[in-house]
Amino acid sequence: MACIILVEDNNLIREAVSGYLKLEGHSVIEFSRVEGVIESIRRNIASLIVLDVMLPDGNGFVLAKTIRSESEIPIIFLTAKDSESDRILGFELGADDYICKPFSAKELVLRIQALLRRIENNGKSSSDPSGPWILPAGDSVSEASAVIDMLKHELTVNGTSVVLTSAEWKILTYLASNQNQVVSREQILSECFNYFFEGSERTVDTHIANLRSKLGGNWIATVRGYGYRFNGVRKEAEPVAT
Image (cartoon, rainbow, N blue to C red):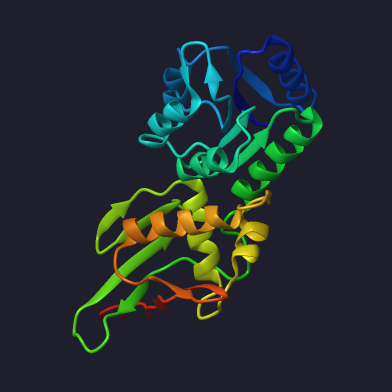
């Protein structure tokens, strides 16, 4: 069971979605406006937010940008804005899923539950991507270092903590768990997300670009015509002095 924040100004839609979620045992915090949403998220009660875009007192995209500046809570957009550019913008802002109206309330609930399961199971795969990792710097003596801490859900690069969105975290850990293997955009969409639409592969490129900006260096390589490869090398633990 989880606590879900639902931001939707259409009363019928909000009541229908809330009803389905409650039938599945989840609790729901309902909002019909932007006002009060950030304060609710700051209380760290909710596990996920379902967010409309066109709201009477603000814009869901703007709200999502504010949320991402201080929280990693998973975001699912639920909106009538169905153009490819709107979807890509949603994912660029850190969305984990994007559902267009009209929609099936049952499908929305299933997507919510799938996302919650992925979050719960993150890091439980047999191929553990936990660091430390090093990124050799060619012929230079210097090298980059990173620690992927699955238990704490934290990434540190060269001793500095790096904040990732949940989508970026999923992609990074998936790439690291497939070290030295090329993974396609289709594989990333299949393993890290549960959506596919015309142009959705471009959202993977957007997430990769954001990851590269935050990581620095050449941690993620593009294999033209195929996909991406994680360049990190697992670092052996330092021996304990006796």
